[in-house]
Image (cartoon, rainbow, N blue to C red; front, side, top):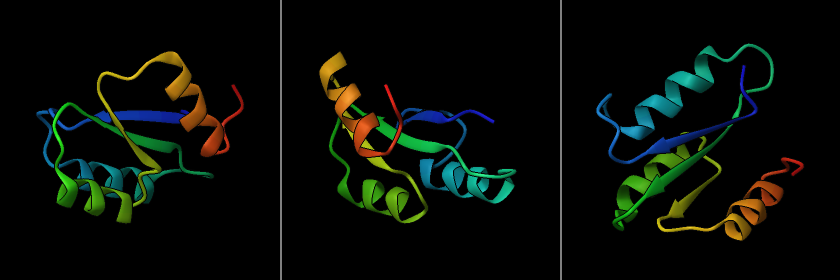
Length: 78
């Protein structure tokens, strides 16, 4: 199982919150840290996805420093 999963709001597989919910239910052991990344603000979707277990939202464009900061915030060593 991966340590980190990045989910786009443009994913064609359905709502990000449903993906996060299924991922956490099917995880063996410690579930991965999930980040939602988006290019447009959708606060309701962000909130629902975080309530299902996503660690945070990254708004595009983001750079390496922001990604490293968010990973450290989520407890992932970089």
